[in-house]
Each structure stands twice: as structure tokens, then as C-alpha cells.
Image (tube, rainbow, N blue to C red; front, side, top):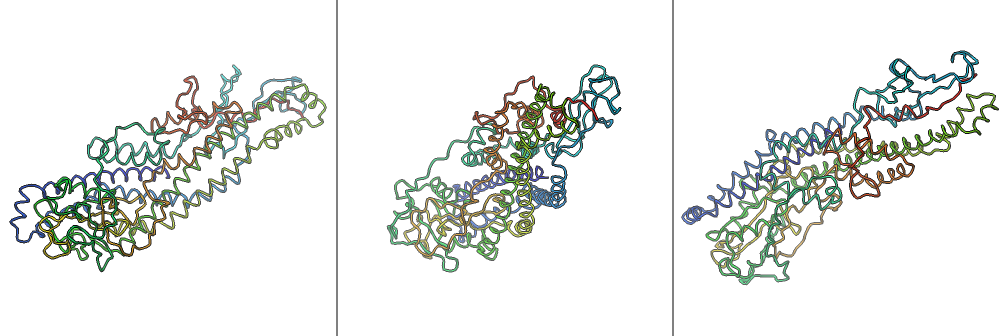
Length: 625
């Protein structure tokens, strides 16, 4: 269920990339149309220029909402996320108690048996010709032990010994199972999500958005990306804008000052060009292309840039506000501070779920490594016990022992438990895993209701603001030198929209846009930010889990390697790679920066659970009363 949930999150984020790409493409088309010579002529002749521009921009609101509706690819993907997280919650409720009972009841050595209930292999008579079931017989025999918690499976058996096996004295030492033992949450999730990439990945718009997203994630998870993600050629970096930073100046060349909206506290910001003169007379000249760049930079990284004007027309502040600050559905964008705050709260409930799931997956990886460590140390203890059982010292002990079986039992117990802390370490790892499982269960119960509210109420095109409450960029005066708030003003300006659904799954900050080209912003109160920065930025469940788990996984693998049992890990890696191919990302070893990808081809992966279990306590002994 965790793999289903993670896969659904990946597909949803892919759909978000597609949504952003299509929205950017539509915005660019609208901008090209409004900046065309034909539109400039139409606007110059229009009596109501503002209504004409509104008519051109309004379809963007409808199309953005439609592209994120329940029937859209994005909406359907979000529905799958919701259903899989509900299924994960149900699974946690149903199975956590069973897991705890399983650990409490089954975390010790049990006798293994075969398909025909074979439990003991009578190898040969050693002391006399009496059959093994007779009281005074002396035979060399073998039995098999296993720890079900370390195996991690519920259906298993020793493969047993066929008639041919008996005749040739060959033992098939493996366990068979009705289900695959090769389970890796993230590899399974990536494999399933890759179907979306195969279907949509050829779209150039999606490729460009994917490249941008990959670059952001690579900066945060560099080691993971260099180890696990196929190299992709990223788009050339966009040219930097010509912003020169924030000025201490308080007014422009024409004596204008940036204003503060009385009702909302939102602020108008000026570009440097706006402080120097009219669009066509400043150096360098503010062309349509440069206006667009200003607007794009202002609305980065997550806003939808709405450029209000060209070198042929513009609007005053009241006109711009009628587009950007619609409160009753009359604008292109909507500004509702209370609803936006609620949407942030509801939407940010989901990243908390993602973080907890990532920590759970990381602990699963560590638990898998601890099981390998357990296996290695038990194997080593068995070998040491077998060697000691062959020694002259032990032979003498057995000759002198009154109860030989009890003496052998004590030896095995001492070697496997008293002189071996593998069992204790496994218990510690299990306790940590249970803690992470409980955390996921709790966060799902607490946060899913908020997620549902978000899905129901937040699929709208809202006005975005910057870190200093900036909402409108005054790019430059176009028709006269009047300040933008004057009724006669004709300015080119820019505001930014955003749909919270397009950011769902990432932490939604209060300041959605950077407002970087802002050269001059009004002073005044800036509300205290509720952002703590802890969850800010892009997030990848599997990259986070891999990064969290890697130090502990490497530490346990180093212990396994130190006692000469590295082949246990290599076999496990080979099996996972055969199951998941390129979608599986291994942690590697402590002495290598790269993943443990190159494995001796002569090593055969386990065809079933774990071959070692059948040999845990396969000690040769004499059966005697």
C-alpha cells in the first residue's frame, strides 16, 4: 500500500508538471496575442480598453480551473492519491496490531520443515546400526532453524529432499514461497509511475518542465540524483534579468511613490525602469520583450505571469486591480486572504504525510539492512559452532557429558544468543520501525480531513503575493508621466496568479512569488510569516528516504563485509535489480561512492525467500538419549 501511495504521488506530480507546462504555454500565447500589432491597433481604437483586455485574459481562468478539475488528468491523479492514502491508512489500522503480535510472538528461532513435513535429515549411522528412533542409536543428523521476523514472509517452507536427493546425498537448501520476497517500496513505486512517463514523456513542454523540476530536486538531493537518476540534458539556463536589487530611494523621477492597498495591505512594487522615466525613453528601452521578462521574473518561481500592457497601451492602478484583485468573481484572479490562508493550511497537511512516509520507507531500508546483518552474524555463528563441534575439545566434552543432547543444546544457545548480539540489534531495529509505522498511522488520521477540504475548496486561480506583500509590479509609465494610482495614468504592470492544486504535494509558502525585479517597494507593516522554512522547497519521497537511510545502511553493510559475508548483500541487490531493473536504487557500500551495481555473474539470486535460513542451525550431532 505504501508503494501504491508513493507511485500515485509521483504520477500526480508528473501531472502537475504537465499542468504547469500547458498553463505557461497558454499564458505565452495570450501574451503574444495581446502584444501583436493587430491587438495593439484594436486596443488603441477601443473605447473601453480594460474590458477588451479582460476578455482576452478571462479564458485563462476557466482553462486553468478546467485543467485541474476532477475530470482532468490532474484531478484524476489527485483522486488516486487520495484513494491510495486512504488505503494506506486502512492497511495501517488493520495490520499494525498484527505486526506487533507477529514480532512479539515470532522473533526467535523456530524449527523449519519441508513440504512433506520433513524436519530432520538422518545423514548416517555413527555409533551403531540401531535406527535413529531407537533409544540407544547414534546418528549424525541435521535440522534447520529460521527466524520468521528476519525472513519477513508469512508463507514459506524448506524445499525438502527428493528421493533423488536422498540417493545422491544432496540437500536442496532453500525456502520456497507463494509470494515474492523481493519488495522495495520505492523501486515498485517508480516502476509503476514510469508508465506515465512512457505515455507523456515525449511532449516537449513536459520535457522542459521536467528538466526544471529535476534541476531543483538535484540541488537538494545531489548524491541521490548522481547515483540513482538517469542523466538528462537540461534546458539552457534562462538569461538573468536586469534587476539591480532593492533601492533605498522613496520615489521615482516623476515623484511617484509605491502605494499600499488600504483594505488588504498589499503593495505595488516598481522596477528600476519605472523610477527613471517612461518606457520608451529609459536606457535600455523597455520593449515588449523586456516587459515580459520583468513580469516572468516577478512571478517566479510558481506564479502565472499576467502582463498588463505593451509599448502601445497600459492601465492605471484601478484598472489593474479590477483584473488582479477580483473579490466577487469580476476579476481574472481572486484575492481572498482568509481562504488562501486556509488553503495553505489544508494543502500543507499533505507534505507532512509525505515526510512521515519517507521516514517510514527509510526505516524499512534500515530494517532490511539489519536483517542482512542478522543473517550474516547468525551464519558466522553457525560456522563457528560447527567448527567448534568438530574440535577435539568438544568431542571430549560430549564423551564426558551425561546428557549429550542437552550439552549440544546449550552450546548452540550460547553461540547464537549469549555470545551474539544480532538478536538484540534486530529488536532495536524492529522497535524503530514500529515507531515510524505508528507515526504514519497518526498523521494520516490527523491530516486526511484537511486534504479533502483542500481538494474541495482550493481549485481556483488566486492572486499571488511576494515576501513583502508585493502583488503588482509597476514596470514603467507608458502613455504619460502620471503615477499609476492617478486616474489618468497609463502604465505597463504585472500581477501573478496561482492555483494551489498545482503546488499540492509541495510545501505552499505564504509568498508564492519571488518579486525579484522589485526595485522599490513601499515601506509599511509586513505580517509575521508563519513559514518556518523546515518544509519549504521541493520534496521527493524516495530521494528523502534514500538519503535518510543511507548512513545507517552503509554502517550495517560495513559490519557484514567485515565478517566476510558481503555476498549476502550482493545476492539481495542482484535479486532486486532483476525484479525492478533501473527503477531500483541501491545504497552501495561505505568504501564506494557508487552503487553496488557490478556483481559477479556467477552469484545466483535466491529463487525464494532466503537460502540461509535452512542452514542456520544445521549442525552435525549424534542423537543419543
